[in-house]
Length: 439
Image (cartoon, rainbow, N blue to C red; front, side):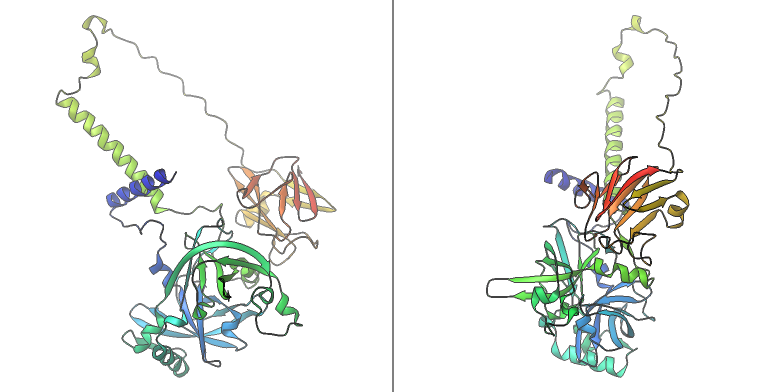
């Protein structure tokens, strides 16, 4: 398999050369593209800095709660072309238990990173971006803080000494584990142990990409350059160091509630891959070259034409009888019927009009704000599952729910990302058991 993958990469590069484009090195993400979406966050009240990343082209930025603290606004700084620019950003969401926050710099225009709806497999490569304090130029950081205090919405030339404080770093590692703990359980954050916020449980990712204090609030990306987590903490002892990130999925409800124009990419969504296009072009080019070689050799007499190999007396006139067109296999009908998921006192109606109005995907969950169909039961997550259409059939997928989604007893997730629904299937959403039926 590795040999085939390497051949595919090489063929893709041949295709890329024929197209006149360049591809990144094997197994690397486009770091220069990601850097455009990473900003330095300055808390002027605490005279401290951290990292943030753009989640919407409208200026929304995700970071850690402990980076913004309790102040109403912070300053974010980024390199914008040939200038250094600072933007005052309002804190629009903060959650101490999640240790997450969202700020908005209305005047800032920067590309947004895609957010991953699902995690990659354990052992997959991950990348941590940010501004690690240990490698900072202290004079440059101090100058940057003074600049932001003086001009929260300012512009400076790139030759400024504070340019050194805006060099985004990237570290590579592997996804090691996903846990459901509180930050107080995991790393013992300072705080009141009696405060329920300290014990709020969330999905925490353990990985091996080196991070430092300045990385707080920075993105943890998968190999496709999609955000899977927010780098938050390092738990160290004499034996090892655990690098921990809060799962980006913890912000999905907030993003939906505040109508933030973020791009949440699921495994079923089409992803344009230039390597695939390049590979196809390379194969076509190789086939074309092979055909040209065959014709050139035949013209030179190295290969005789097939008719020359047939004895003269056996060359008879033949009548070609046109064939009737082959009968095409019937395609699956477009989904036009109405279906229901019924049971446990619930009846969920699924019809084409609802699917069309929701952009081809119906979300099922407990939250009336985040879901299209509400199931009011304690075992149901805010957004529990999704039903979508593909090739005229309906499929169901789990949305990282707490209590899981099962179809005919099989739990969705991991290798079983989505399942095609058939009449009579049993669907379990947490503790709610439903049956897929027509009508």
